[in-house]
Image (cartoon, rainbow, N blue to C red; front, side):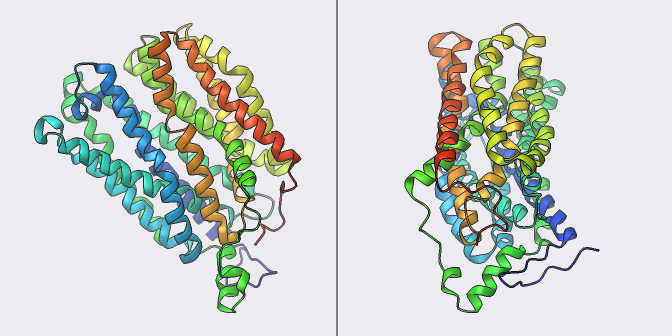
Length: 443
């Protein structure tokens, strides 16, 4: 029988299994919606480019569209600080409710937005403002969702529970790509460019309402209730953020370990449809279909490797995935050039790499920060990593392709980023701040 959660003493935590599962759904569903909204923009980039960034050069239109895609990622660190601090001071639940409202309204607004041909450059300006709102709100989503899920996880299952956060991001990509593929198959090119592209953005409204209802029913986590109880008792260590351990090297190591995941996901999922159609001449539908394979494989394998990290540790699983990415990046791009079958195998393996690295990553990040800093810490390091190496990935691989006219050259981007993460893991092992499997999570 699951026990009821309550305000706890610093030495006792009771996990309500029913509340734990509810938090798992609420956190992962928010991630699904967040990354669906990012993905639908990325997948629809070739369609909306001439509508909001008209140019005599189609390539310039696409690059400008991806620059606005990247803008939301560059703003994530700001949103991470704002919403992270609110989450750590006001609670996980109320801030996550506000975040899902902001991002869903912004995405729905894009679906209703007139184009440049209708209202001129105001269309571009409003689109950019919507992406700013998405970026700021998305910056706080990851930290709050991971904190909600990890702090509700039963002992010894933080890797498994945390993996469902990144499971949500991959499923969000899959849904975004699935909707885009369905629209591309069922609508003519004219209808898709005229009104069909709006459908994917408008679907954010019912999805956001569903997530909002679920999040309103979620209780605060036992860990955060502890902090509230200690604050009420006047305990000074629970009143303010801790600052002692967060040296620049500590944070840089954390970001370095993370960046390979961001680069893999945004390269082989969001940016791949445009890359496949531009570099290999694949049809719109074939390119989308292959990217969906990556997302599904990545999502389904994350809980497996998250659970594995509960048994063998986070670092060994992350190290294996990072080294595999470093070694396999060039062969994966080489296989894509062999046609649809080669691309299918290549992107299946890419999805598996995403799953290996993404599975233990949320637990790894949460174990780097205590409860009173966790949402801010996770949100900031994730936002920095995704801003530099994630949101820019579709633009970078497309730019490399256009400059070199050699699709294989794009593989050096993931090789470079994997090398950064490998250095981070080596530094992590040598660091005295390494702390796997804290029991309980440090507060």
